[in-house]
Length: 469
Ligand code: GLU
Image 1 (cartoon, rainbow, N blue to C red):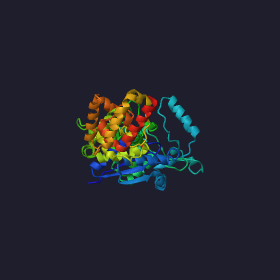
Image 2 (image 1 turned 180 degrees about the vertical axis):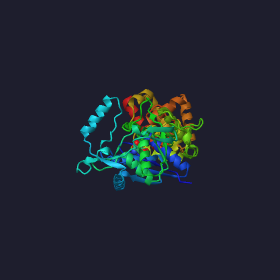
Image 3 (image 1 turned 180 degrees about the horizontal axis):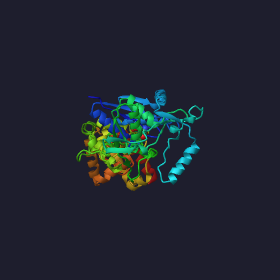
Image 4 (image 1 turned 90 degrees about the horizontal axis):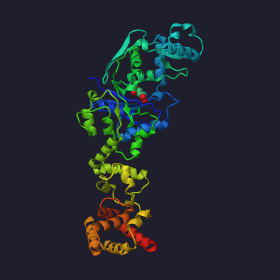
């Protein structure tokens, strides 16, 4: 049996976004399911729009999501000789021709066609009029598209699709500057790279008949096609490459786990029964074209957040800790002088839904000096708090074993001693140690912050209260 070979072939014109990576994911899943190969190809024939930084972004995004490729990245810009030699060959065989039409003629033609209510298309003037053939004049190369009949294919998602050849025209395969065009390069690459299944966005459906006609004229096997529906944003608009807000690495920055994003992506336009949670192995095993919807799907940020929260609390702690460490570094918070980040996950995983939220709300664990919000300090602590703090500080300092249990019983002792509810003591300590009025259980927080920092924060607040209140 022939080996399945799929490819992801982005044009590096902007940051890789949700729509593109979902296409990559489906291609990758199909190749993995069939134990085939998945290729990465960078379609950078348009020099004006292609950017190096976009290539870097594509690669980093795929690496972060662990959508790994077996071959490539291939760069179309490095294959121009190959494309041009085939174009020259097609010229010799009259499968393509030089077109010398001026922009002015093409503009006029377009105007007339539109005025007459027709779809604008090249009229084949140079295909039939060869008098300019030997003039050393600027020209493009056009493909001799069949002028009659139809071209059809059975799309794996959308079923049978047919185009009348008259709807297509003799499209340009080489520009005036000698560079080959997208529709042509794709075909040559798909042939040379033995692609068996072309899985791409449905915005390419209209390119497919043109590409199939080239396959046919070169007399080679045509791959199977699967055009997947678009993704709409939360507000119902089409996701576009220019919207940086949905760039993949932005989700990484915002504290999402790759597992959550992949899970949300796989469910965009694909389903398997009522299942919502898919790990990578399940996605690979269960993925099938028959599960792909024909209608557009909607990117649902709330659902993504829900999935992220789920994965923070269900994936192995050491795995989450790696991603959390990355977030700490990004936020410039050194974790060297503090507890292992693994210990934060059971404490903060339930409270916060993104890694960024966790990191931003627990910097007091790693930083020596705390910036206090004095409005909060003044609200919860007064001069009368000083004896309580002195009492508790002394006992904390004398604790033989720094453990959650011993801290907890010390808080109980203090509450009895001063005839105050435990909650009041807890809140006082919470403000002193974290500077905010909401946190995980305070005995656990004191434990994790460590004796040295706890004592120095109590000292700082005692000093502040004695000088200011
Ligand atoms: N380079 C095209 C794009 O970024 C994809 C072409 C294809 O998959 O055939 O939209």
